[in-house]
Length: 80
Picture 1 (cartoon, rainbow, N blue to C red):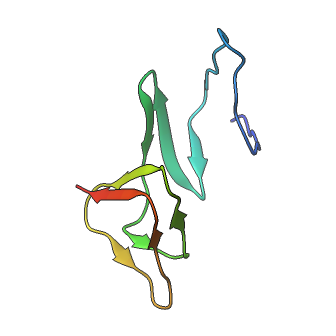
Picture 2 (cartoon, one colour; picture 1 turned 30 degrees about the horizontal axis):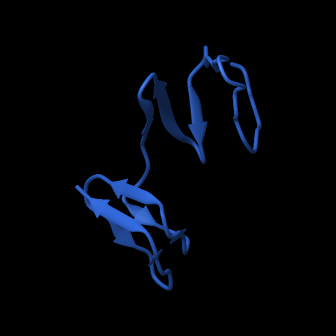
């Protein structure tokens, strides 16, 4: 398996990024298609994220916010 460690993926205009092997984030499998990312994760938020102003975020399924954690929503967050 190929291991890639990156902070940002920003292809130049006209370039593409192709992942040939399965990839994961924090051991959770991820998939990428031409429309975006299909992300899997546990249903518990175990940190304190901020959704910044001007950002549209969404979650699917049951969401649990872990003990002592806070989700700050300055933009839009939809749970479907």
